[in-house]
Length: 175
Image (cartoon, rainbow, N blue to C red; front, side):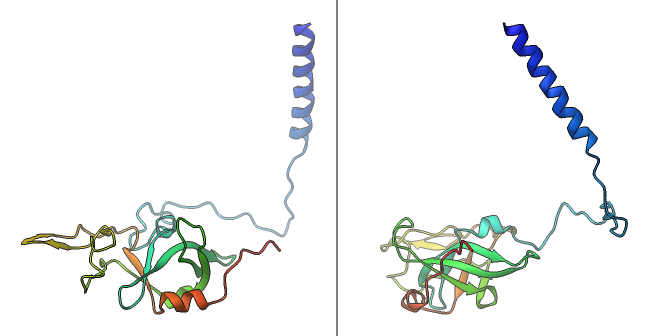
């Protein structure tokens, strides 16, 4: 009984494989195949570029170093150029978060750590220490670690949290 199923399976696979091999792809005569990539076209370093995967979740601050939210998404056009940044404002762990889309040219990225100017904004005073910040505890000062060349420390957008919450909510279209 098992032999019958095995033979039937092999015969069916062979028939499907011959149909797949019989379909030779044909390209129109007027279209040219892309030239193969050469070693000079490809670079393994891409120095001076940032990884967008690391920019998702990046904290967004305003000009007064007040936390506004974080980057939830980056929207690109069909050429891959980033056109807008979706910022999540408010909420707790994504619940009740207000999403707004702002043009990429309105958002500035910086590799410098956030400078805490007042006691209310300092780490440990109701907030947590951000990686890359310099903190002072008593007489000891902890230096900031070296900036990562693959992504910025944070983003800056010139608005208050209330102004962002007043902006129209961004919704992902299904059309």
